[in-house]
Image 1: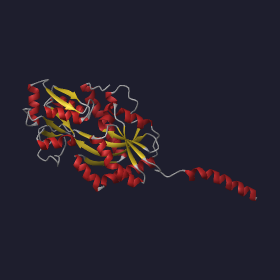
Image 2: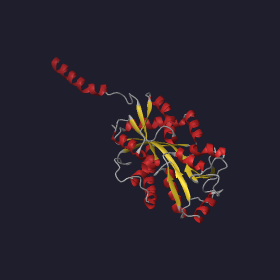
Image 3: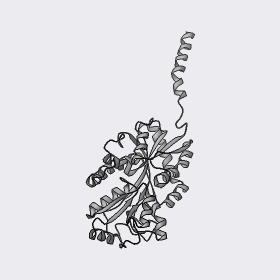
Image 4: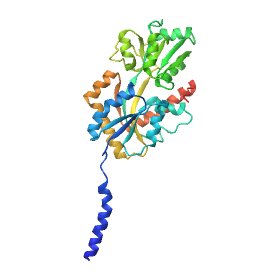
Length: 322
C-alpha cells in the first residue's frame, strides 16, 4: 500500500502545482491607455489617479498616450488587449458613446468589447465668446444668431467632440444656423476665439477659466445644473433662460470584455479610493472638474442611455467623422 499512497501524493501535488503557481492579481504594472496626447482634461484626470491607484493595488499604474482617429486607436488597442486586468481604457464620453454613430467601420464596440470599471469625473462646458461679439448674455447670443443666420462661427476641439455635438444639440433646440469650425484641440480653438477669427466656443473650464479671468474671452453660461465655484458670476444655462441645455463630458475606466470579475473589483475599489484622496480632490477642483465616482453597473447604465440619446442628436445633425 505505501506505493499507492506515494503515487496518490505525487498526483495530488501535480494537480495542486498550477494553482499554487498562479500569482495574485496584480503582480505587475497596470497601463491606462489615454486616447489623447499629454495635456487636456482626459490626460489630466488619468494622471491625477495613477499614484493613489498604484498605492492601493501595490503595483505601478502607468500612462500610455495613444492619440489619433478620434479616440479609435486607443479603443481598438484596449479592445484587443488580453482581458487580464493589466490594460485599461481611459474613456471619454463622446468617443465611447458617439463614435459608433459617427464612424461607419469601427473595429470596436462600446458594449461588446468593454467592461465598465468605474466613472471618475464629469466636466461641465462653458459657452464663451470673443469680447467684440455684441452678445453679453446667452439670450442675446441666440437672438444675434437668429438675426444673422450663417454668420456666427463656433470653434471646438474637433469634429465629433462633446462641444461639437453639444452645440449641434443647442442648434436643434433653438433652430439656429451657426457654422462649425473644428480644430485639433481646445488650445488652438481658444486661440482663434481670442484673436477674433471665430466668435464663439464651448469648452471645458480648464480651457477657458484663465482667459475669462483675464478678460480675453467673455463667458456667457455654464451648461450645468450649478454654477462653477471658479467662475461664480457666470450663470448656468437654466438661469440664462435655456433649461433644456446641459452639457457634461465624463471620464471613466473600462477594461477589455472578459476581464475576471475579481480583477475588475480590485480596479474599481482602487479607483474609488483614489477619488477620495485629498490630493485628487484638490487637483480636480483646480482643473474645474467634478469628482463623480460611479461603480460598474451604474456606469454601464449611463453608457447605454447616452448611446441612445446622443445617436439621435448625431444622426439629426448628420455628423460624420470618417
